[in-house]
Length: 347
Ligand code: ATP
Ligand code: MG
Ligand code: FE
Image 1: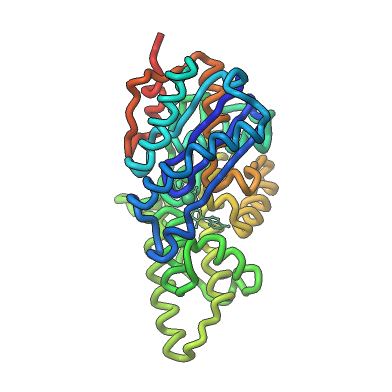
Image 2: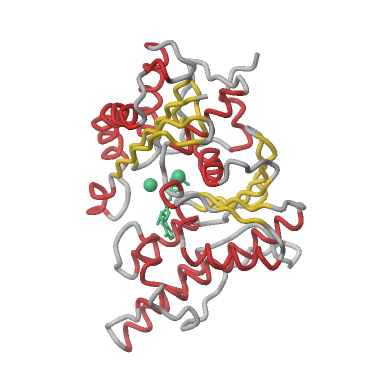
């Protein structure tokens, strides 16, 4: 099926056309510059920009795919989770187009989209597999049973992985978003320069939770360390700090993902979300997986952070299976990924 999808859950206005697992066009208009002065995302600014950009992004996606509406089998939009006002722009646009051109509407859960980004890297990928979802808002280990059927096995108890990168970059005054900046600096630093706590989650029984992560302790350790170093010398060794921090995050995520895959007998780990672009994580997880004979998949870099191709890819499979959303579908700021089938009318 050929699907046009709109993604406006956060600060990227994205439209893509995907035929099954092949990208025909993918337009991503980032609002980073508009939010940079605030050091984070301002919801009202995001919604307003989506309204301004979405129509030209749709036109561009059709043009790049050399298609008109007759070549589109379904229209999809991210409908949860995300900023409510931002989601509403994309969903309302998709509903209007679905009604106007008499096409089925497919609402998509944003995290299912991040999972489907891996299918864009490996069209032969088949469930079951484990997804390590590491984004700006989530750090999850998800058992992918089938299209629409997911079980969350592990989560973060505090900050998400991407959020930790952003906050640590902020306390080092490096700019926003922090992930790509720290990644770049880390390549020039010594990852063993500063020993840092990995952030294990304790169980009431005295043991550790194997799949949950915690990054707030690491963040605090980075704050203390930078304050201490700054007292000794105002010029921070930012490369070594970045490398040490990044290696600690990579190690923590790798350990949990490998343990989870082995425990559940899954031979493939598909990584998704913005932090899947991280060089340290890619190297670390790849090496560990090799020693355990596991397959690791990383989406192409442009499909790690938010994009509409991953949404269209998920929607194409739902459409193929007859999963269609009612035109009364609403946007929701939160929804567990285990509940995604609620987005489709049951026939
Ligand atoms: P969610 O999907 O949970 O709603 P989001 O959509 O905002 O959150 P993504 O777009 O998937 O998140 O990812 C953005 C995050 O990825 C940011 O926190 C950013 O710092 C981080 N990120 C991007 N590139 C890298 C990188 N190379 N290394 C580490 N982190 C990165
Ligand atoms: Mg984003
Ligand atoms: Fe995302």
